[in-house]
Length: 469
Ligand SMILES: Cc1cc2nc3c(=O)[nH]c(=O)nc-3n(C[C@H](O)[C@H](O)[C@H](O)COP(=O)(O)OP(=O)(O)OC[C@H]3O[C@@H](n4cnc5c(N)ncnc54)[C@H](O)[C@@H]3O)c2cc1C
Image (cartoon, rainbow, N blue to C red; front, side, top):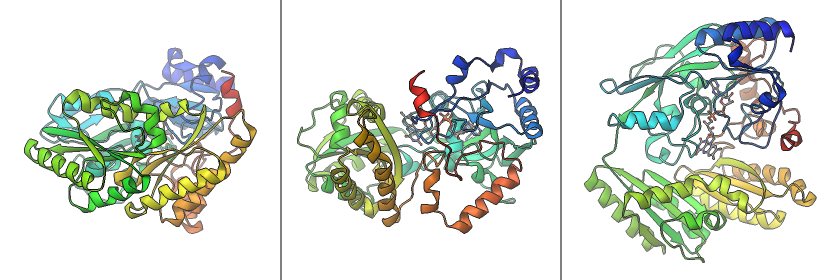
């Protein structure tokens, strides 16, 4: 990047908010995938106006800008694959308002989700979306990826709580979308267009969120099944029975093995799968629903444990939250996919993955938000074993073929980013891709905003270089 541009950006934010050394820039080269690409400059803007001035420069001099929250994304969204500027939004980290009368919160994008949830709950209110990364991801990243989590079964995902946004368009204009009201249908729904747009349409600088009342009680239960098939089939039966779980999570025996010692109770070593459930609401209703759910799972042949104390429930959910990193106990490397299938197809997905695992000789553990049909499928491998490493990409492709055959979707919450860009055509028709590209061009005529994501097959990321850090 030209020195004059670096000087101009430094003049906008002040030198203390710009990183230029290679060591510092490497820290912003990657996200939670195993991909990395070195940016030319890392910039921490302090306001929407500063973002706007940087984007105006980017348009004039045609350099790429990649927005970044906490870098916990799982599809390479904040990896600056074409270099240029990484725009880190963590200085915009104020909770501007929590309004109990309007049931809204107004926040800047760099607020850590866990802090927002705690601040809202301190006022007797609740912001439900609860990705397992809540303690370290940003609300801006959540909006850009449309993050979900276990309680989506009852409450929905980030999309269902964003009423309005302030965004800086790639051409520099600062624009507001949506409303502060619970309803609103004036013009096209641009707010929703930004939800899950993966930093390709603009930079989100303020968010108006809908809040709900904090549930008065919550119960957690776990049901261990002797076969994967029985656990998988129970998921849609529970949902169809009207028992209305708040969360309904699945763990297969490999994932169970990785977090077993964190659980607050013993699980039969022969158990093939665990369903982890939560119910919340009014205390009496919660107690009745939890009891009915326990009885229902027992009828399906499961050994059921109900969390008796808050501490037990917390330990259970803490174990669920660390599954992803804990899988590295099995193999040092993994590719994580977050496919979704129709609820009735979960048993077929799990049986298909089992077959694929045996055919490819790879361990493919599966866990996640079964209540939405959204399962995290992980292909584990050791990069130093050539056979295993070579089998990974073809296996991922076959997983997607299976998912599409079951009328599912390639991503429920992690987005397309870099990792799934080559597979976009497996789900979207040429006409749909062409229309989306025209939309992108209308927002970003010079393609400066997070280029290389979603659409084209990505250039090879410099994954190997990351290991040398
Ligand atoms: C251990 C672990 C568990 C996880 N569990 C879940 C889970 O349960 N559910 C789930 O949905 N996800 C989960 N994730 C994925 C990840 O945490 C989410 O995608 C999260 O929303 C990313 O937030 P971030 O602040 O880290 O964003 P980043 O990774 O920094 O960025 C993600 C994308 O958003 C864009 N972006 C970021 N900020 C802005 C902004 N202000 N304006 C415009 N674009 C922006 C970036 O360009 C990028 O494309 C998990 C990740 C990890 C590592």
